[in-house]
Image (cartoon, rainbow, N blue to C red; front, side, top):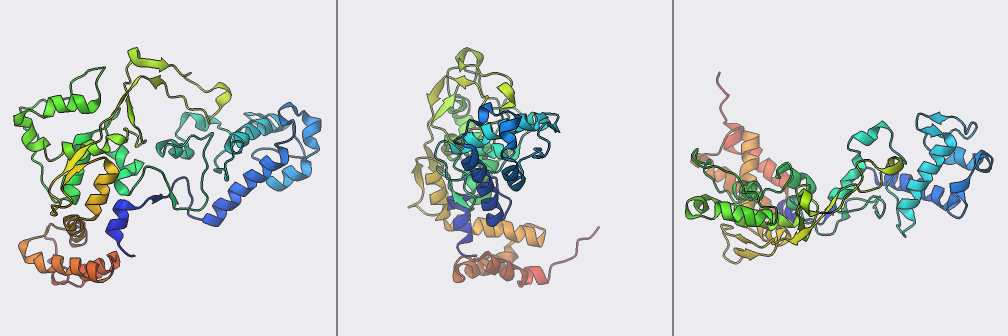
Length: 370
């Protein structure tokens, strides 16, 4: 409970595909590694029932999914125990034969769940391939090209459109939630649509629609902040190039279904790309040394973490949550005291809560009248 706001914005460590228990995750990974070590040097791809039956004792110990060591011909609707063994080993081998230290303990194969979003697909959002993922059982763990809340896939997906990023919404969130700014509603006379152009990036198309004088009066508060997040696509995946996802730009068409229901394959079509521009501009941090051009989202988050205005904004949102109302001028002392409590206690959010809940604003709050 130290430097909570700064850590929220700048941490490089994340939880992903994790159940909350490091020991249990380590044990699950070790089990998969043990299976891999036992069979990797054997010709398991050509095993018959007789060859597999020689490993009954080992199979009893490791308990591979839906495989009954005493009746290898039984299984489930995906096939016999022998077939399930080979499917499982194909998946295990892909996870460990490229020198990975650990194996993510997701299902060995997919059944009906192939039609739904399996939890391990979170790897793709963090730019990991499931067939070459050196997953960490000890978490939180450092993830490349990530820094804090604003680069987490969950936040990026929540502030995207259905098929593309949304620099306006991303920038609006930063302006209103972290920089205590306000953005007027879109005038009813404005057609808020980005023009189609199959050969230009979203940023280029958005700029042509919003940088006219009439539009820029409002968009100058959002676009320069949102542009910094163009290093992440609509699913929150880090990128240096933007895919031009139109039929005429397909470079490689992938199959609609994975051969043999291989759930490790990436079935996204490959498109022609063009470099992205993630430069933006921070204005209104309350500190002239922080304001200015930013390289990308990570540069932006580092500057925001150093802004006192951002700290005050987060405390203001905490005030609204606990009081159930917006702040007024008479709450000034409460907010000042809460910020001072944060600073005096090495960035403790607990100290902020205690300060708010022992303030006159909370103690003498009025009941809500019907």
